[in-house]
Length: 92
Image 1: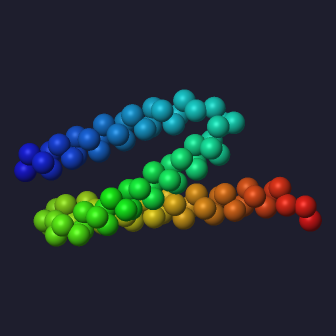
Image 2: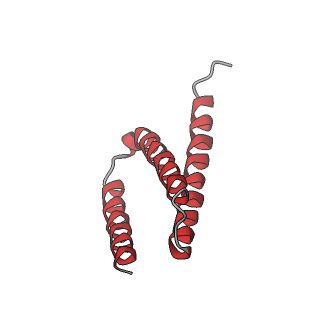
């Protein structure tokens, strides 16, 4: 139970810190920042998949599943937006 409280505390802390960091980024840097967050989301997916290899309990499995879904959504959305932005630079 203590482990779950620590995990939730780290998650909430990361959520708050991430919000304040990203809200202060100038618009000029949003594209490079998106690339970094896509890479971090990919690391999140790998970490959650490694977690499932250790046969976690039901609560941890649900949290890992949610992490995979949200990270995959972020990666897919980031790739779609990156592809759209790259179309602006094509000579046509």
